[in-house]
Image (cartoon, rainbow, N blue to C red; front, side, top):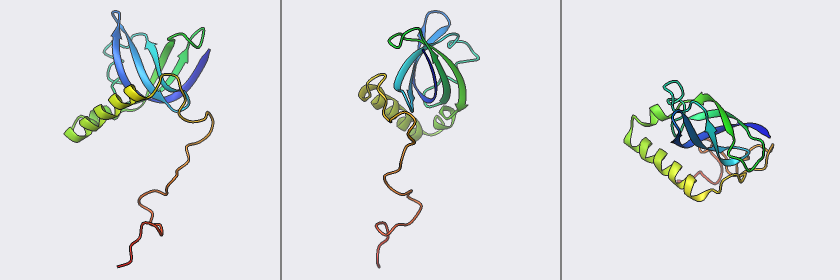
Length: 133
């Protein structure tokens, strides 16, 4: 079994001497955990920080197994967020609530269906957002 998806790192915990178990929020597979071999190394630790975006490839013999991740950094946000107190509080709240509320391996979106906006972006004026003064 194998799949690849973009994800946001929610938590990382050490496993053995050099590996790490990464809990990530993926678009098509929901909250998912996997083992990153060498995840405790100096080279991999900066990419495996909560809040960073990764491109993950997950491989396992069966779908119920923990599986192994191959992780490639896509966007590093954790360094920027740690510069401000509010950003760090927001990141901690996001990861804690996501880990507590979302079940593991349950897709939030239908696979292959793009996320649709229910409201227009805030920067575009719409009749409901304008006030007569």
